[in-house]
Amino acid sequence: MDEPELEWPIDYIPTWYGFPGGSGSCSSVKALCQSSLVIRDEDVLLPATPGKESRRPSLSFLITHQPAAASKPTTILFDLGIAQCWKSHVEDPALAEIYDTKFRPNVECELDELLREGGVQPAHVDLVILSHSHWDHLGDPSLFQYAKFLVGPSELESMPVLRTNPRVEVIDWESATFNTGPSASFKETYDVFGDGAVVIVNARGHTPGSLGLLLRTTPPSTYIPSGEEKGKQSQEAGSAKPPWKLPVGPSQRTAPPADTYLLLLSDSFHHHLLQVPSSLNSPYRLGAPLIPGTNKRRSLFYYDYPEAGRVVQRMRVVEGRNDAMVIFGHSQWAWERWGMKMWRGVKEIGEWWKEGLALQETPCEVGTYKRPSL
Image (cartoon, rainbow, N blue to C red; front, side, top):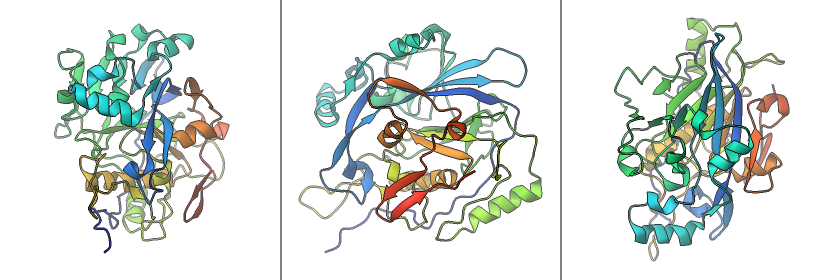
């Protein structure tokens, strides 16, 4: 008998809204690794080799937001990795021991040590954005005593270490204060500084309030698409049929200068093969291991499996562009392709296009996916 499949939104075609306007940019984006854990492929990716597992980084990202005006830049952290005190973030001690055995987390050093080595004092971090509440991204928030924290809906109740922190703000997608309109392929986004440089996206699926982060990594060009052109982009994405017809936007040019973007996603996804935008009928989908002794699968890693699948499709639209790169918080593939061999290190990725850091080729079961070249 065939295995019953969990609902997968294979027919979901995201709308392309265009990248956000504005005059700000991120002058630096650094991927930080000070911790790692073991993830079994079958839990997060299908099809997968049963029993295959690999050690993966638990990345944080250090971002410098530079406003257009000559004013003080803002230092931002997106996620905090794994801290030595990670078990204190799991309220059930028995569950913490299960996690310790299953994921075998390893902490090379605390995040503040890595920051200080790079000349950044924890007290100088202005803003911490947490993708979600899980222990492998929560780090040790107490290290950042002066930072404001932004978390997604329903996530704070799973963060005992932050529940009473007066500097925590919870994003409410129903509020016009936070929902500043659609951007890229995401309907609900929050432009943190109002200048298009740091945009939080609703990546709900892995948890109820999972967040992603869209960053402009070059100063924006002076070209502003007209309403007619934006509508055309949206129509192209909305009418896409397999094989995937990628939205062509004004920043896709044959030569620089070009506006470039990074989309940072943590545990909305765990495996680089999910990035392959070969077609809507890509064989890769979110993992769902078999329930022992049955032919049924369970969504072990995803609070809302169909919604997480829709975020996969939105992400694939961004990844298919030649002016954007997607990075996952547990991307072993990216970390190794960047020449990082140890589970402790810092890699500047803000100038990813200039430095040739994009994952140009991704071997997969349907051949080799090659990124479009700028």
